[in-house]
Length: 596
Image (cartoon, rainbow, N blue to C red; front, side, top):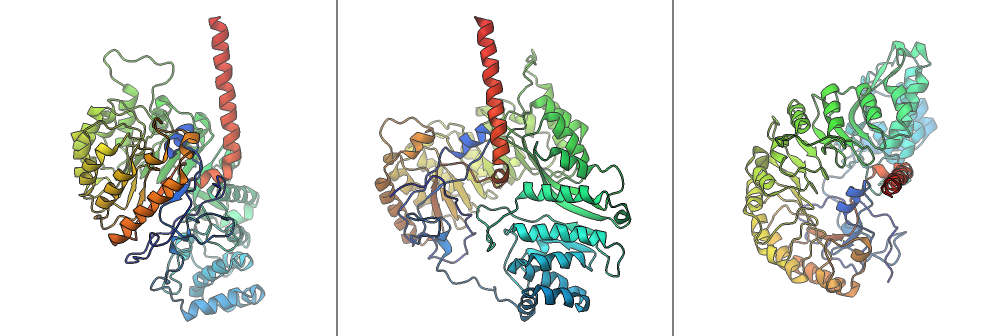
């Protein structure tokens, strides 16, 4: 049996409560292995699809997954969830949408209240022609894509994870047609909200052709630019709300769309903004145009090379009063290369950044993974006015004082998501770390401790501390040298957590040759005894079934987290990485010649 290192992996559907036959009662015989750990992928600036060595799954082969377990097959064979009955109104709308020519002729006589129903029916059937006509003639003042695709009384299925290319392109082109129609009898549309789509690893739409966030941004920006030449259409503009993803390849187009020279028929407003492969000045420029006063989420990732001076300038000069979530790239809080440490140990840039963050009174999610924060966590977090619900401190080189502060600060009692990956925990587990888990226990839903050096001797204390986390739904422990015996003990303790649904465990240490050093690199992580692994996986499945916890999905990921946004920009990202490597090698060569 061969390992498939290239096949796409499926997004796991959320488990249903009370389905004791879920996942663990079914068989799987293959661990799916890709490459390095998620932490190391994030450090390199690119997350690869997460490989799942599924300890709970199905032997049923899916197309394109020959010879191995399909990680998405966990829910196959279960009865349909309660409350999925479609109404007669929706079935009638489907019948009409399935005949585009008839639907086009019937719109003039259709009640305005039927348009949302016809839109969802057309989306289900992927009738792009009907969708475009519906948007062209949309009679209501608002069009909100996420709400229309969500569950409803007429059609309880949630379609927001279907980023169907044909349907989404039809939406944008239909909006353009609507604008160009001018002040017709039904010309009432004022706001088109195109947010709410969830980008997942494998599309649920029948065509399987997705239009990701970068593609949606490029399409919308190009359409806005084309309409700017239609001066007559600007008399009745439409405000378009969107989640924007900008890279170097789309920068100029997006800038033209966000900053038109004159009146714009489609006015673009950003609710969330993701930037990759941009220079610091480009980022500053496009964010000023994006309407930072309305921005709710800001992700600056991968190949946007920032330091603390850039971040301070960005926050001070632009300002994000309504920001809820902020993600900064690797080393973004590190001092500028040419700076010299202050003699008194102070860090004025970090102090200024913390003050700017304190002005964001709605900020509840902060990710600063791979920023060096040794001894500085209190300076960064204590000024914040609102308690954080999500905090990513992976690989931030925290020391004991930082963990002690985190355990005692007000954020600890509100944390729902916490990532402390890359911080090696000594033996015994530090009291500050256990106190942190205790304070976060009433709210904590997701905990990640990858590459933390957790060994068998830590399992007892960790299991006892997690026992108080009654709301915990997801636990990630890859990259830790735990034996099969320790995993059995830990999993037995976790069975007492009523809301737990997903546990990511490392490949047991017993499956690797003796003497391997942790954390394992990519090639070493992929070389394990598969037969031994399968046997241990079977034991863990049996343990869950005996405990009546078949609703817990246990898997062994060996690659980075799936990032849907890199699927469209992988080629550009790779070129940027190659250029950065060439520049680094050239600099090293010059330094060597100078030394000689």
